[in-house]
Length: 400
Image (cartoon, rainbow, N blue to C red; front, side):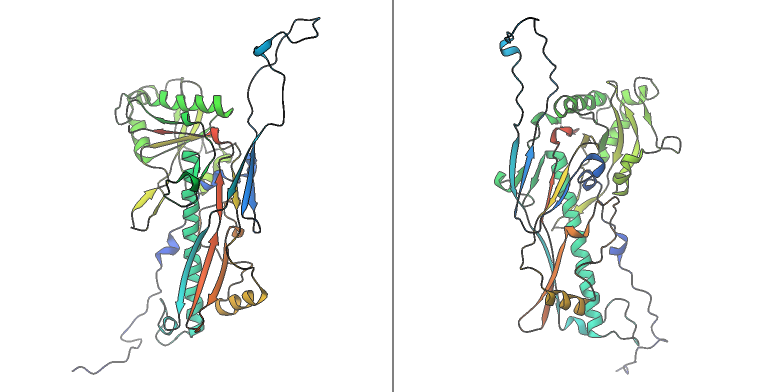
């Protein structure tokens, strides 16, 4: 039987621990549409109310009437009615709730943590702080990915789930998008003879007519973009003055108003000027999330084409946590145990700029078990991503 050998620097060389979570920044390319101050977007934090009321006033593009001079009545009848102001739609929404928890057991903090050197053993409290930080950071990452999923739902469908995956309309926030803004193309884009440009122009005209705004962005799924640039008409007319398909270069940089989207993970692919005269900056988006079974799903599916405007108002609302109010004792416990302040919790690496992510979106706390053998770290969030100007967006399914 071999004699046990003490681990030492001659028999072991400890390399710095590698944690691939540190190299997995979380994307926010679609959340960038919401709360954008340059587009008039609102961000509302509501820590003490469980319901938000959303008022929406619809406009139109009607013209003024001409009437015969010298009359004191309005002889136009049903052709022109008197203006009436003050009409609006109001929607009351109860906030959803996201919650992530992680436990630290007393026996866990007796074991070596990643990167701990043999002759520089950590203390139980040091290990507990390490585990607490990892749980907190991963909880925030998961909630941000969830937010991106909800933002995707809202942009692509005009609806957001209160429970992800539900088919119950009572558990969905419906922002009443015009149903004609979701279109399945007549000929799949995998056919190089498909009228891809006509499909894009069709959605753009619906947005202009119903949303009263001009679209300026398209985000194409990977397959849709690949098929688009292979399209016969696109290839033949790419240099024609009717439209432009231009690469992103130093001479043709991405306009500044798209910076928050690029920082969030969207990949600029060029500028498109359609036969009908619409100018759209084109992006692809390769990022996504894993479900509970480990299946990877992209935020923009391969055969989808999203079209809209970055200059319209999209709001976001963050409701209250579901817990008792934080006391001074709670704050002291959190700081003493974990070395983290509840007032300024650390944030993981997130692809964002311009206030897309705000620490006030998250509520963190911790609680001990009765037998003092376990402490649980908890993070909550209660987001609603509202496409307030909902008819400013449309979607093509390019694989009917």
